[in-house]
Image 1 (cartoon, rainbow, N blue to C red):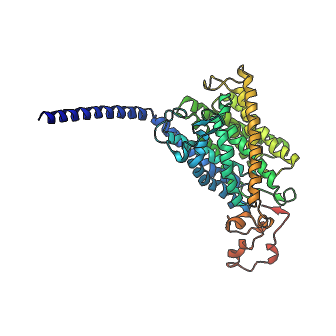
Image 2 (spheres, helix red, strand yellow):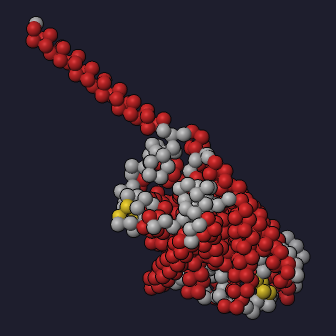
Image 3 (cartoon, rainbow, N blue to C red):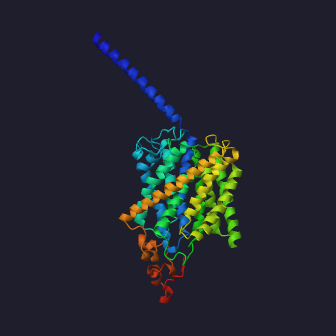
Length: 476
């Protein structure tokens, strides 16, 4: 009996100890969950959704600027990237970009397949939202960056080569840059380079890489001798409008909280885009005699690009200056520089994103203020000229790294597959040649494809064969 009582009392004591430990663990877990701010979480969820919308918006923006025979291939590249980069990001891209630091150069693969990336916060990056939410917010940045590159080589790259290039580029260019600038332990972050939402990581890297691809594969057939007009400017305007709308999530969301800093980033983003729209249109009006809707759409995007690195560090008046200068600078890059140098940056990814991102990164060194963001630094006009030199160094490193790595990737890929489309495929358009479908079902004389008229001919009077001959002096 005595032995039984001893066993029972021991068991009860062990149960009480276990309950105490369980309550302690439960209290600790509850405290961690309590650290999640529902307002911040809601805001970043919405911001992530806005940034996701930017890539379909970019597809429309680019799609309207190409010729009819290439609209679907252009849309397909951006849309396909959403799926392609999402999978890459979840498997290894996020871990390389934000995972535990290795020698200030790259993240480890400790978070491969989102291992240890769950619903609790990660205090290193976002202490008030789930780690999983920070991951998917950053995923949308990786997606839009890869999609931006496609504007430079539009209408002339094989889809298979494009897909392989994008995966490798994201892994060896975007992920290291993201870690250098934003990752805990990244060397550019530690030396004080400021990039609030992607001037170097997103825009310079994509613009420079796009230019290298365009130079590597050469100009479009007929470039400089044929008229290559945008086929659907209303589509381009819709795309620009969606980009402007989504950019609020891009920049304001980078505050990672529903805070005053997010509001400031939202306001300066809008103001800079508005100022750049005015600057581009007015500059174009002075130089070419007419203001165009394509110029207005391009100007707004230029302003959004320019303000991106500075959005969390500058106030409203500097944002107006950044936007005005950004609109004019990008206009000259697109209308003057490209013409003089003769490269075929088809949809001006380099002229807008490469040049606009460069100006924005430098402008951050001029106008940044700790009064706006104590976690930043003061720039030249607030008594710290060293920040300009730091920003210039960051720009130079990004230019060189993106250019060299992109060229190496292309050289390696070209050993194993054909990168550029055949001339015959360019003649009929990549929609038919690469994807076997057409964007429109009405007559398109300039596409030079009899498939364009098969459904019409079967339901109408016979068509004079002379009108079906493709015109090689004009392309739409």
